[in-house]
Amino acid sequence: MRRAWSAAAWTAAAAITACAPVPAPSAAPRDAPAAASAACNGTDARICEDECRRGRMQGCVELGAMYARGDSVPRDPARAMRFFEWACRGGEPDGCARVGGASLLGFGVPKSPAQATPLLERACASNDAFGCAILGEMHWEGLAGAKDPARALALSSRACEQGSAVGCRRVGRALVSGTATPKDPARAALPLRKACAGGDLEGCDLLAFLSAEGEGTPRDPELAEALYVKVCRAGGAPACTHLGARYASGHGLAKDMASAASAFGRACALGHAPGCLELARLYGLGEGVARDDRYAVELLTRACRDKLENACKLLDQLGARR
Image 1 (cartoon, rainbow, N blue to C red):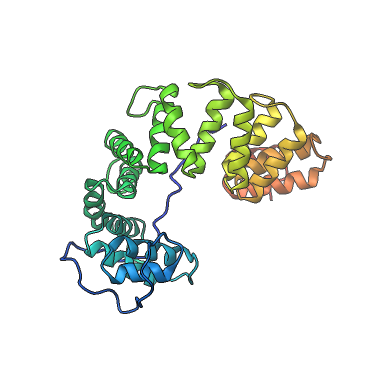
Image 2: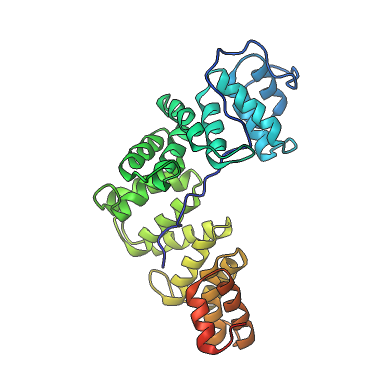
């Protein structure tokens, strides 16, 4: 069973163009109308527009995030771009971090790690958690050259200290696997708790693994189950598969084949091929569900089409590959 997802699940907030350091603007974007003066907290676009117009750059960032997500306003990546870019030009590190992230990932702009790097470095140097986290991802994944785990871990640690859930999850994962640092599950538990509390699903998934196994933290089956269920319900397909495997084996949780089938079914519905494979096995054996060889083959075929080698091998053994 995999302990964590294979790649970071972070995204930039919108499709935005890169910005270079320029003097802070004295006027807001033309499409930012005046509104009542109040604190912008990312829920009222009029208030954030007013703050942005008045030169409070964090208001521009919040407003850009709202348009990027379509949160309380129509989703408009182009408009989000203008506000993030404006914030960056006005000296707001978080604005530059989001612009850099968009350039790195190619969201609405040509993909350009070279263009993203100086913006992210500038943001991270100002202790921007988002900028440090994305810069760390670049070095973990080799998105701008060779992978550099040592540099990545330093950046992720800095991001975690500034409150980044992604950064904390990366630190926790490194301590669990012994990547760029001595293996130490006991030390991993704290950053993973921070990651999970910050809404990072993979962090919760890995914390559930530690709790189920009793690695670095007291074994706690109830907490492990609660975490797996939480992540699975939130759409974390790998966690659904992990939960199903725990129910099916009785390792770390009470054995419950019906619950295993339910968890594998959700994983498969979310597109996780290993979940489809495990559900197929249950249907083929009639464990936790009524035996249905035809549906089992259908599930195996789905997993095989997603290039899961074990599913393809099982289809060949059954003489059922189409």
